[in-house]
Length: 335
Image (cartoon, rainbow, N blue to C red; front, side, top):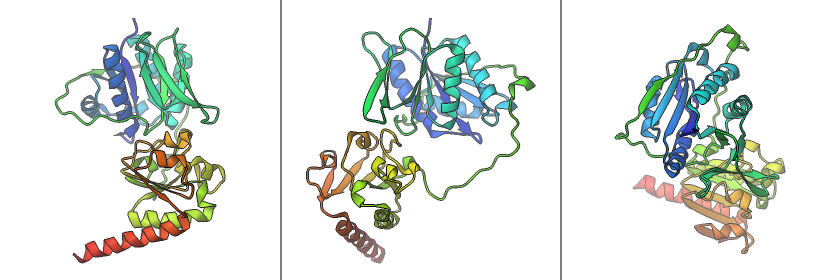
């Protein structure tokens, strides 16, 4: 009988990826609703030392597969290992991060195990009556939210976008089991040869990691509208983000997009500049600690969720805001 909620934990360069920790928090919630356990699957070379971290963040058990073939992510050996784990352990639910790795791995596993997969989920819940997993994701370009069930096959599987779920605080008192799972690999399992690993260091922080975001929407008028926003961001040591309208218009790149079809963010401070407040955008930033909105339209929906709203022209408000912040910084420096 299928049992327990499994989470695939990503690691790169022997460092745990944040999305896995986030998914353990949601898995803990789902498992508690089912009266089951949370099991983390950790693959790599010499990764066992990370298992205790996963237990502290909500896992009851960590299944560790270590092999030199797993040092770097390659589809075939990773798919082989997890397929064996799932077939032997028979989990009720398996969730993956909707990262480049998760999006490559999860569909292949669904095909091998003969089950369904709901991709890019923004919400996971247990149905109180059927105890099935309700997997919600944007559909039709983010204009509709679809809730999908996998009633007839197990495990129920989903990928979840980074930043969507809330990680649990580390609890040093938690105890759990660590199981070393043996997979027999051979040369045929490595169906690609890694010639070189090229890494590009980005000077900009990922918007999901930023404590302060200055976000521009259609109301900034054009790509030049991001110049004063960038100045504001620099003043605050913040990052620039955007609504889908700005991205679709070609004013800024996709990696800055916040919303159902972009990234989910939870900064301490979120500036919504010229953003109307469409539900697709709000879904990606409504959990921000403090939301400040500036819009010429007093009826803009963004004001319904903003902690502080300013009705006015961004071109007039932003320079005054920068001036005020710099003046405050100067006063503090002199004290």
